Amino acid sequence: MIISARGYVYGEKGYETMALLEDSELYRVNGMDLQDLYRNDIVVCNWARRLIEWEFVRTEHHLIANLSEPAADRYMQLLREKPEILRRVQLQHIASFLGISSEHLSRIRAITKNRTK
Image: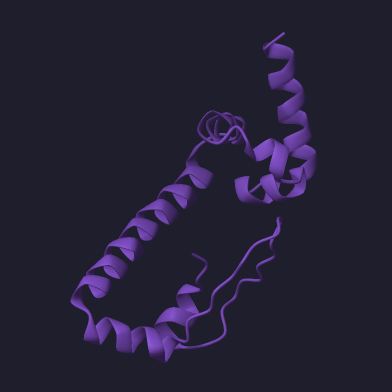
């Protein structure tokens, strides 16, 4: 699911620009239609609330990690949790996700590669 919090809550254009890295099939739901669905189906409403709560916690964790954990630790955690990421995503996007420059990511990768030899 891709959603802009600003767009979802205020109905305004979001800050984000999204680009798909792989062929994908997308479905769009109009905000008003989604609100109608929530009003008319408590199960869908509760599911959406839980999804938003989960995403809020995940985003909070990501922000705190970017502020408090060393970049190398964040990189290693990403590799442990999602090892397929390096095969599917360009390094510049991984660096952006980690909140570091591509150059810094290259240095981290070189150091971690030397440690595993």
